[in-house]
Length: 142
Image (tube, rainbow, N blue to C red; front, top):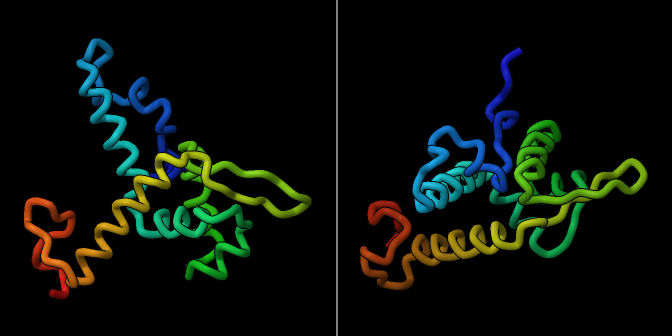
């Protein structure tokens, strides 16, 4: 059986050491860019961003997350596992329930900042110079 993309998710803490795109004797900036690209790849699905957003306030179990996020339990579990393996989430068991919480405040802060900026741009209420935009000009309402 071939591994899924999520099973191949690399722990972002080890991305620079294990990434084939970073030569061992490579420049430090190569390692920085490779680590950033690995984190962005991990966060590049709307479902994972929704999960991080839902957990920003406090820890939740899978059932609680499923009431907030429209997806199936197997899909939710797959995304939670990928975020956990990467060190973005932490978990604890309480009897039969597993509770997830944010383990990487830096990843959560990055998600929050990017999503808030995009929401402002999509709202169209502010005139933002093209050089300062995250969203391509054709995608906004205004």
